[in-house]
Length: 489
Image 1: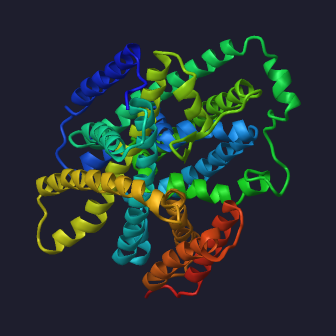
Image 2: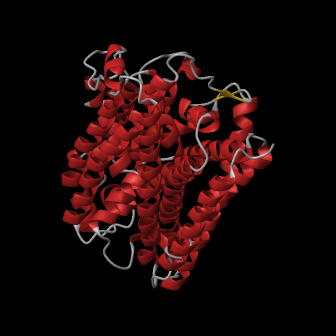
């Protein structure tokens, strides 16, 4: 089909990719001499850059397009999830980061090696890699689906595959040569890009609704609620202080994808500040996207939005982009979605490569007598290329899985890292707060947490329970398994 892009949209699109090309060239000129430099940066990174990078990494194309859906269908109570993030960041700053910096860790799983032996680090690393391939491959597919809809006006496999290549080429451009320093500094560009796009949408929608009493109408329709004190809401105050809090501790403190950034700071204090600043910055950014959702609710209040595209259910924001957005703004929002997708894609390439090389490959090669740092630096870049291809393949597999399987890989894969988080939480809590557990129970706990959450999914045994409670139960099972094991002598 013919692209819905106008000439002005293509100008905006081209200007963005010119910015990507120039910035990737200049950011990749940093001298890298070791895999440690590649994965943590050869020089200490500014607190502001790390904070914006963590912010950008925590967002994705799914977030960019999906957050407005929450407020369109409901209200602002989703923001409570990000206040939970602040509490989690405080815990990570005072409990986890000092331990990581004391060890001069490159990956967060080195803490388990110190406590339970090398096998524990490898097991946690493998679980991270498996979960990340599925979860990030699915997220990449969702981002590519959106890009294909906007650029090509269809979701044919060839166009979705081309969109995947576009996204991964951009991610690889930042990651391959310059490593994590290039990733973090590029994330600053991506963060400003998608925030600018969101601001532009809010302004345009507000002008479009100038004859509507916005606050009065939203209040009449109960759209301005920020706190849920019931037991039934997905983001009620009880789940925010339990399951969602655990999820955020795992996401920002135990997931190499997020934590890699804060490990590149000058010291633990700078790392703690960057994490806390990032958590605070997330609040206004998410409020911005929730505002888009409520404005779209008013925009479609009379006629309603047809949330379907070639048989695919799409978000209300995507409906608006496809059918209502003017020339130029459509191009800006498209690059905003791409920026959100790139910020999560390039970060996961660096994170997966760091775990594969530092936790799995390096120990094996060093046992064979290889200690040349140039070899490990080359291996790091090869790993980035490998995971670029692997994630692209996973994204393409997601295209066919979603169409030909009763089980939605997308719904499963988007939660896979969370399934892995329960096992990691149980193991880390035992390692930090008890003297129990050993190398045998680590593997059992990692599997136990994963299987528990999987068993609680409606497509497994028909059990329906809120995801926050699944996190709580899965973590408790994993922690209990760790308590069964005596400390290795």
